[in-house]
Image (cartoon, rainbow, N blue to C red; front, side, top):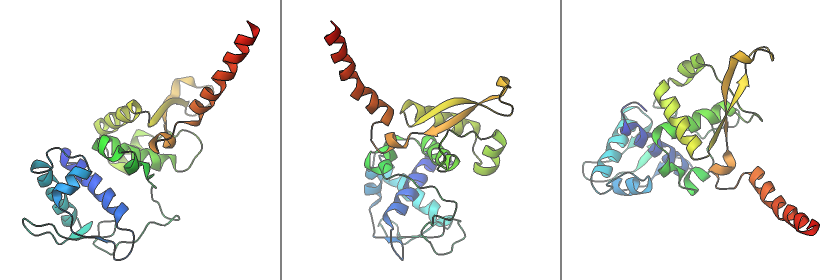
Length: 221
């Protein structure tokens, strides 16, 4: 994410490439930079947006995350490389490894376009923290720095944006002794139903019950 808006384009581009390259040799046919820019919602896709996409492709290739056959002025095919950045062959994630599964709603519902780089980064981090657990998760600031190497600004900006969209809920959770209420910390929960475009179950239940309550009130009257 370092490098301002360039980091946002790099992240969105790599995630989308990983979505599209589904079988060996995990390559993608040539796609014009302006088409990538349009698909990812980058401003001015014909000129500045296309330039930003080309810069992102060059960066990903330089850091050995992809192989690009792009030539000056012409699009080229892209092949994914290992996620570790060591230049090795790409392999599909497996359930036994430490991977984060991103719901298709990220693309189907247009979140890949609407979310900023900071928010998208925090969505991935919070899904990693959640890890299939059934309750909100808290993580220490030290773990944040050591595991994710994120700045406090990226963390706070990303979480605020996710909250504004209703994608993340933040609650207070006691750390340590249950009677030590002075040690309350923020715990985070990703609302995956909202991410998929579905209405949360709690809202659906409320809406189903309201007509019944109304009918009972009218009957009593």
